[in-house]
Amino acid sequence: MFIGNFIAEEILNKKLSPNYLQEKVKRYRELLGLNIPISAHGIRHAFATYLAESGANPAAIQILLGHESLDTTTRYIHASDRYAEKMHRKYHPLKK
Image 1: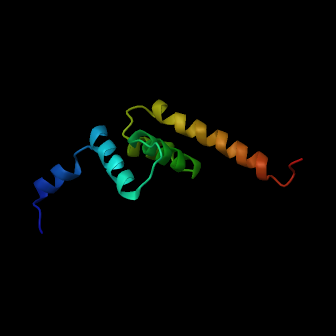
Image 2: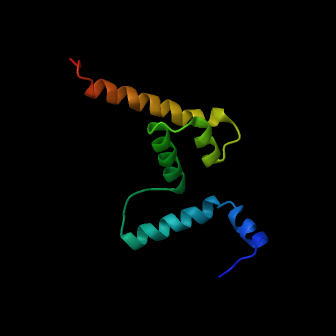
Image 3: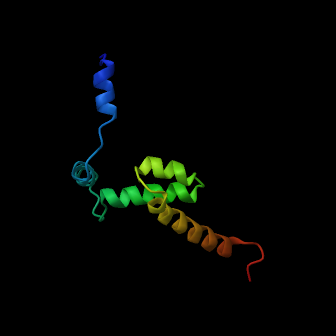
């Protein structure tokens, strides 16, 4: 089905509300029979941390999360740095 450019832009530019996402998370948890606590915020945080740990550009993470300030995004980068240091210490060949 063809959607006019104006309507397509309206759909693509809409932001998802936290309540909408939380309802979707709840619904799929129930459908899958998952009895673990997870929230839309937890998924967002995990996504950002995964990107940071995978070496994503902080500016790209900022854009994807919709943060106005790069300072807000740096908390994920710092978490990534701690993770990298932990893995380095755990697996470095000269580990004592």
